[in-house]
Image (cartoon, rainbow, N blue to C red; front, side, top):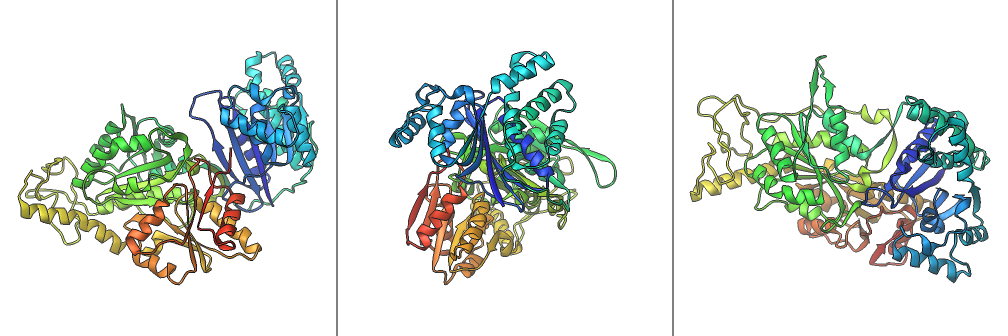
Length: 623
């Protein structure tokens, strides 16, 4: 069973809270969830929405088509009515609203809505949308939000602005009733969310009960048995948890979307219990800018603290010089790079994969940087630990790429996800320093024993230096120490198993080559296509530097088609494949709108390539 539910409304009025509340109630009944949040870059007022896929097994993607759309404003209806297949929950008072009068809606969207309605012989009001949907078999449920909110106000004697947010919960109640699940799960979720505040608890409970009266069970979903404990969690939080579990002791950041949520979570949970029964902590510093953030993390690392920072595109640009300094001085530091829509400020609250080559080449000059890219929530958690280990083992910057689409999405995960093989904390090659200590001692593998500041006399500089760290421009030293730094990447390439750099799913003559957040939707599409007799193999690149050259040659040889699936214009990951191996994909499926790749559009695109032999398909689904 796969069921898609969406709720939308003006940003700042509790859409996220509502989606999490609904998801919590459904998860209590034993169902898995995958949810995606889309929102504008302003603070309040513009349209935001949350799409949640419900299943009796884990799903990893959302769809263009939505079974249930829960709305409490006209804009949500106008933006998403063409996606609804089963039910629309809407505000009856909005029936007279015309698309042209919704000022918060962008002109391009308004024009598209008007064209769709008028081309089908309808006017442009919500009432016309209802007729349009009725003609297509969609059941529309009118809710008198004003009456329900007035009831809440009168019963609890609270001001209207406070009660206004309960509209969301009315919509949740109506949505939940359609599922046919026990109301107790929703009541329990409300108690967990608002139980510490009697006013908010009573307000939302009344609103939910009112909403449930508007709809009757249609899907008749049965309660499922939960064999393991489960957690509902997003990508930002998982990265933060991974860092804490990996022994992080210092995190710097400057606020930027969507990276900030990771640091604020660490700050709220910075005191942790150690394995010896004591307690430790993570120092979290909000710096004045991203230049300071990377330099603070570098300075902390030099003292021996496991250190990291987190940022997004514009902030990563500012960090480039600091990253180059860390490469020159062999500083272990983890940079979590939350990739979003670019260039410039671009689409600051949308997702993208257009910065891959920037991450690979960040900073001036040649120096080792290890690049890993997570493809799902489980990988986000473990890659955060792994990234800290790689940084200290090879004494170099590690860049951990997490796309916005993965950071702001959430899943219901089994707790056993976090009880797999434990990743030991590796501090790398350490030294107590002492007389004659050479911080940059020449070595065959490029790695020198590392002493912490205070343990030995150490010189660090941005200029070229000798084994002691003293500045020198002598040519033979330059040749040797330059080569010594870059040998670390060669060492990493030899030591890291190539099979751990790439994930392979299925076996077929047609390969979907991808990296990052498109992993989930590709795996869901693979299952759907198998049922249609169209077979594909999914190859996910997890590490771009060092790159698994020989392994990629091995798994991609003798394939009929190699289809690059990426959220950028040039298929940058595929370009890296060609640069490193000489293999060129035969086709591409690309998207750069900032929205996630949707399951139904991907299935159709793969069929276009495999069945109809198209070479390039550009996707644009999603509002």
